[in-house]
Image (cartoon, rainbow, N blue to C red; front, side, top):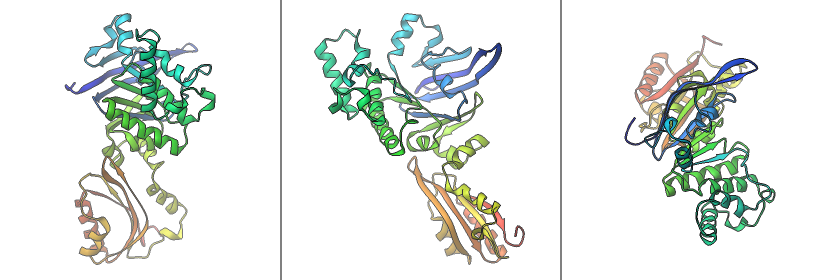
Length: 353
């Protein structure tokens, strides 16, 4: 564990008994989260991600393994000490968990009930938090009068009342539309910087990971199948589950459907190859297509391209038909591969037609 590690989950296993049968919701899962990171845990429904994250604040105690937060062994803490530590771990949920009978102000003020603060100090703090999450004008409204995004802003403000170091987000954007999701993620990023938070996000949405996270762990059937920095995971996924998630957000995978359908778009002449180029390193500096056309006598017909910025670097790629003499195409593709670009020949004219 490095000096900058704020959360260390080691060999976590969580076993449940249901209908007389024992099953492992989480098995031998280990993650190390650095202070100030936004760490994503992604998996399909039932993968065990929520169960794993609930061990961080021991809302769910692991059957085995160790939980170390800010250098403290949480499993050895007394009930009183654990309550104190939990105050510094905020949590927000998919369905907001607001009290319907209380207005926005009272929902945010609720955790401060036994804080020892005066009524005026509580009022000042609540309004300050509501301003921070940009919803102070709704202080007197009730949850039923708010949109989903506004409810989540209130929930975030409430989670910040005890000035936590860590914020756990359990599918916090799953009930929101794409535009609102982006605004909430932008808010979380702002709060992370302003309040020096470490944020752990559970999600089944790869777009969320791509938009906000520094590192990610991919879960399947209770196990962590892959983890690392977000760019590396997106650029060069190793596990089939990760590949499925990435394909779900990328147009570059649609070429397989076109090939399977024998679409005219991907039919090739003898001297042609259908190629998918993907960025696999952050240091790609030379433009892909111009490098080929400038150095080699080949023609490139781009079918589609998808480039976006992840962690301040371009990621994605291009699907194209490359035409020319076979040896020249091979040399051009080797050159591109040497530039830290993934080169995948999907189809060769005369072989698959």
